[in-house]
Length: 351
Image (cartoon, rainbow, N blue to C red; front, side, top):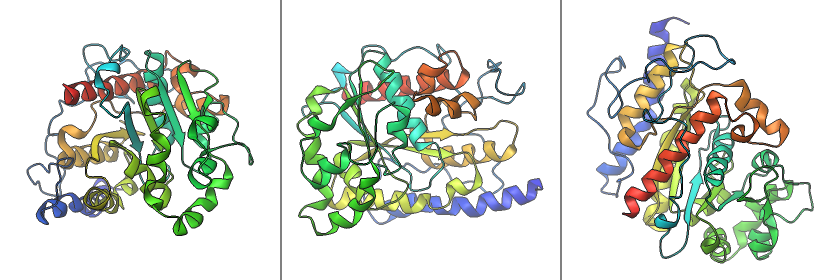
């Protein structure tokens, strides 16, 4: 496709981001989205809050030379987060972080698994709650999630104490998982008639918040009741965005729903991070999408940008995250850097 064609398609898709501006215009609180100065649709402006790609990045064996110009922590891009979690706990316990995007295939589950593993390997106590009936996060954690296994379904629908369905991750000490089974596919319908259906997960997590520094919620690729439960239970949300054209479509609807959740169900919910994924420096389109997202979200976007990586894709088939499957790979280093950023943001806000 021609360069002009890419520009036109991206400009059309980016109009969905106007929801962030619309939310502000209607007077609703929008501290999570501070639109920057508007720019023409040519997309050739500098990236607000960023300094471009890091100089002379290491090139992994998985890609061609020059294919991974990604931004990381310049001081030490693979430094572990360290013992940061205890000081960021609030009165209610550890940080509850929903990782959500209603579009599938954007690296949502991959990101939540690797962020959770990176923080657990640093010494933090981490719980990953799988809310996707496909159970991909459970697979990546090496946790059994066959039909009939005690899971998120029993905690949400039957009121089983969530502590009884927690299982340790196979390859990461300090990381626990609440698996999701195919039974969860029917939960959307069953929750419709349940009293206080939107807050079932929040109540379930109350008993274990003091046990963990971080609780990650892996949301399904939809905006149904399972995702609503996650957003009501969470303190913050991380949005993975794929560096491709279609990733921008529907993003406005997600932002609008977050605004509605804040208005009616969870006033404390905030977007703490936007994570760019599947970045391919060989294509101009990836750079354009990254620029467009940074222009609208500014400093909320993490400086660590996840590249396309064979190792990242392979890891789940071995029941592992990439940070344990191939710790020396570029993808593992990027996710560790992203975990550093996420942990540091909690310290700054807590302090």
